Structure formats: C-alpha cells, structure tokens
Length: 389
Image (cartoon, rainbow, N blue to C red):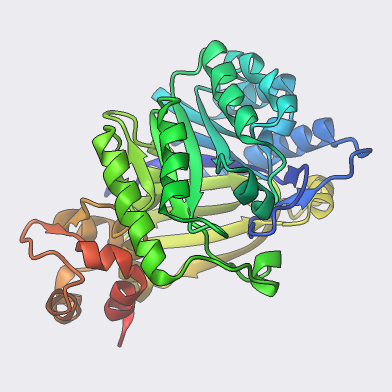
C-alpha cells in the first residue's frame, strides 16, 4: 500500500471582538455583554474530534493550528483541556508544531503564559500594520504600541517561535509606510513573517464599499522594496507571502502547500483526506462542518454528527488541486512528488507545461516544477494554463 500524505489538525474558533471589513473568514463579532459559550464549545470540539478519529484513523499529527476568529479570546483552561484531548486521541509527531492565532489586544496578552503551559508552542499574532491610519481603515482595535507589547509579553511567557501577520497594499499606504511596518516588525525579531497583499474578497464590507487602494505601479514598488528588506534581514521567502528564518518555516502551512491531509474541527472547519484504492488510484475527499456557531453547537446532539457536507475530488482535477498549493512554494515541487501526490502521470500535463514555460510562467528546470518570478506574480494565469482543456 502506498504511503499517505502527512496529517495535520485545524481547529476553528469563530468569535472575534469585531468583524474586520476585509475579513472573509467564518468569524462572528460578539456583543460586549455577550458571554462566550466556552464550555459548550469545548465539549462540541472534543465530540467533533472523536468523529475525526473514526474518519482519519490512527494517523500521526504533524501539526495543530488553532485559527479563527480570535482564538485568544478563549481561556488558558480551555486550551489545557483541548490540547490534552487532542493528545489522548492522536499521536503527535516529535516536536509537533501547535500554533494559536492571537490579536494584540490587552485582554489576550495576560493569558500568554497559560497558553504556553497548555502545550501551545507557536503564536501567530495578527498585527497587520503599526500605522494609526491604516489600522483605523482596517477596522483593527489595537494600536502599534499594543502590537509591540504583545510580542514582548509573548517572549516573556516563553514563546520562542512567533509569526507576525502584516498586510500591504493598504488604503493610503506608500512605500515608506510599508517599509516602516516591516522595520517595526523586524525590530521584534520574529522567527516568521506573513506579508500579504490586501485583497477585496466577496461577502466583505470592503468588497461592497471598496476603499481607495494603491495602484498597480505603487503595489509593485511596495512588493519589490519589502521583499528586498525582508531578505536582507535574514527572513527567507519560501512561499508567495511567507518569510522565515532558518528552520522556522510553518509546518502546518507547508502541509497545506505540499498537499498534505488535514482534519478540521469547529464551526466552518474544513478537512481533506486521502486514501489509496486497491487499483492504485488516489481518492481525495474534502469535507466541511456547519458554519454558524449555534448550528454547530446543536450538531453535538445530532445523530448525523458535525459533518455538513463532503465532496470527492475527481481524479482528473487532482493535478490542478495539487498545483494550486505546491506552485505557491518558491522552490516548487519535484516531478516525482507531483506524480506521487497528484496520483497522475506527468505526461498528461506536458503540453500545458511547455506553453507555461513559453509564456515565462515556469522556470526552465529539469528537476523541479517551479513557478518563475513572473509566474508567482501571475499565479492564477499559470493555474489557468494547467487546467485549460
């Protein structure tokens, strides 16, 4: 039997203090007088996890990522019980990366030591910008000083693996402001930096009422200058929007980009599982959970379980599914890995790949399938070529 991809776990916490106008994630703002149903949600997550044990089998977890929403709204006791429950149900790989998303609000910072004690060993702090005007435009509720203090608090709590989220292409942003954001982030010596462009996603306030954003020429200037500044500081770009110091790449995100498997628990969580059929065909299924928190909580008592839907990925679509992830990586993917993970022979794509190289979207390399610098900028065009026809 052929080996299955590595397996990760995603945990979704759907609540946040206030929904940001650019956010298209499954997040729900809470009223200041509202008490989060922490214990009820914890019980539901553990029950959901039990069903994932049946679905995925006794496979080892290479990483755990707790996202949202704002997961750091939950108490340390919540995560002590959750991480213990995960470890009781799944074997954790040596050095398993367990990441918690956190915001720089003062409420969460006092909890960092408790999160570390619960077994969480990596924080991803959503700073987005240090500039007052940009933070206001993004609807963020912290300021630059709180962002600096959050990192200091995390270090004091014992976290030696931090990711900072920064955005660029923001309203009223120019090269100088973008570089100042990067420089302030670098002054905090993060092990990892996610630096990504603001995009207007459907079903967001920004999509309905678009703000004035920098033009294409300004965006190129910001990207070129920012990339150079990060690389000079020792943060190596390994994915379109991800930079890391040596040995500090995000294991969880790498598993996504390398087309690994993952199980998902929590409101709106998604999963992807693979299995090999007897005839050697790779069968891949995607599935998802109820999005609305109240509906998800009711599922705990539903004999049908938490699953809201599932869909098999057609074998002919596997190369594109794989490419959508793997070609985001700067170093690309080996041809052998393409064949193994997509389950399809490479000769099915030879004509399409030749056209992509002719257009300058793929590197001329005999060992790796690798997007060119132009291909990374126009990844959708590259994917369209691969999927066309």
